[in-house]
Length: 258
Ligand code: 5IU
Image: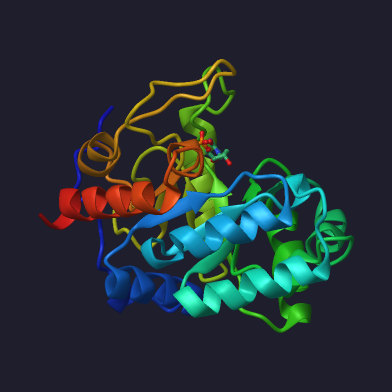
């Protein structure tokens, strides 16, 4: 069923999560609810995209584990660009193991995610121990990091049903303010305190050969009530990523405020 609710931006006033507050403050300042998914495979490309789209985004989403030459220098330079252009770094790690394991996955290994990310996400399937583990690792890092639960997916035939999504909502409420929202395809929390970032956004395509399904910014923002849009290939795969990012930024902002 379609929710038909307008997006919640701005609702920052009721928030007591510093990460959420920072995100909404950046969004307001830059007039951008755009997150670019930079799914490229080298540090050079990643930093190039980040610098090019930086002025137009509130969040840069990445998969550190597809960067073939990742070093601590990659994260250091990414953080410099995030500070230069004022955007947040979202590692799309989709943690999905027991608490004890995700503590290590979050803080150790080659990527040391908790040392540089502002936002991470997780599947809810292991239960609350996973969230506890991530919160613990976050506390050890001494950094403010926000968690998004994957409550729905954009891919065809995914196994998530309404009951699972409703359970995610319950878990997220219990975990606020560490958990600040969802990756989903529609508004889940009627108050908008727990926000939704929606992937599967592109204007020029309906999907890909491997099950991805795309919707338009208009549909997701107006009909489904999501708060932020995630665009990957529609931007980094275009001839001029900076121009494409500006277009998606302006279009999505005007759908909400125009
Ligand atoms: N992503 C999805 N759908 C989902 C989830 C994550 O597409 O349900 I959870 C990720 C995958 C990719 C980005 O990093 O969002 C979308 O990229 P494209 O716009 O290139 O399809």
